[in-house]
Length: 584
Image (cartoon, rainbow, N blue to C red; front, side):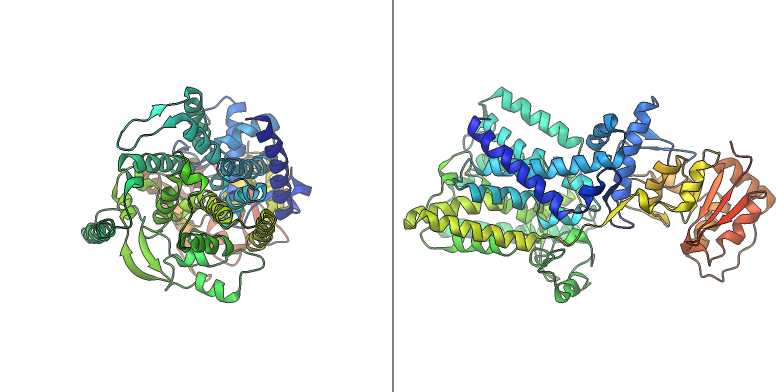
């Protein structure tokens, strides 16, 4: 970067970092002992990822395989959302919470700085460039996922990849292969892609879609279409009509779409200010939880809110008669960005749905029938790229309009300041929930002092992105980092059907899984001596913790004859600890 770029980037990064610390306060006061986490959410899985990778490397084991969970069989982590970039950061630190907090803070600061630098290619106003970085780094999409999906907020590579991609290639309409302008930039593309692979495969797919969508602009000569004639609009109407019918026939034929349409967005997701501290209302929450509007009511996967000020400004500029040519449109490299913005909006909506009303199957929905590409089954997550492109396209058009009108530069500064204040107000999140060492139950702390290798927590379950058996409480994965005992449960991105079948094949465990959910007065036959002995041989439970949620159920009574000779201790929170005094 040039010296002027550094002079802009360093204060910008510091500002974004301070904003992150302010919006997550009081996390900064507990950086080494707490982390953002919604109770029962996936954040505990990601902390386990960070802890486990270092545990495996330090002990000389393969970090992509484990028997710390799903004991005694173990599991592969190759297809798991492992976020190894945070695990690698933990290697020198040896503190999973600290590694997560440092990684997240750096990601937010660099995401904003990178987006602001990308915006500077076409936008002159420093305030508008800073606002571009703010929208990308701190969009409600990301802030809402901060306490659950760390992988989806590791977005620092995205704007830097886009800059490298634009520097690397020169495209010509109608030609398939571009001319390489900078092999160094090509190398940066691959390096940033690899770092993204270590962060999250959704974000990596987004980079692939950006690259293909950018190339498509030139392959199909989209920039040369004359939208003032009727033929272009007739062709568009024909494309929409044919794609709607074809996709409907494919769905009626039962062709698998990997639930892409089920998880697809609704226009309402762009309008509801969920998690906005000052704008979220009871009425918005009611719509958010309405099953007539959303197929997954209350799910954060429905949230695509980008505020009101920026989208309204973008629509006004797009519809304003006599639009001037912006610096972005004058630049051949920046010209496809408006098309890419539209493409990513359409990707979030595989079918056009407005407050639950299904209107049209959009052409982008066809991707959900294509193997490999349909592994990305939560299309609303593409709003991440909308948050990158929308401010750049909008602010470049705003400056062009301002110059055409010959309006005072000071007035633009005033408008930019007001817009920044409005976006801050719209994006300001509700307090981020925290978890940490202080939340580890006393029973798990005591378990850490007991001999033995295996801990059986109840309730327990096995869960992946598609299936669930039993009751999975992700907190157990975090507690493992304290008691350091292996667990018969697991919560992984992908678990093989064979592992699911084997999980409850044991009759004792199958009964325990049933009793977890059964009414309190459920009566079952006690296990036979042979069944109890087989259970002990297979799982080798040295310590058992029955959580307070099961204290009134028949679990404990069923378990006692299975574990003869185990000592028992009750805790103030209702937990019951059983352990084998002969455990080794």
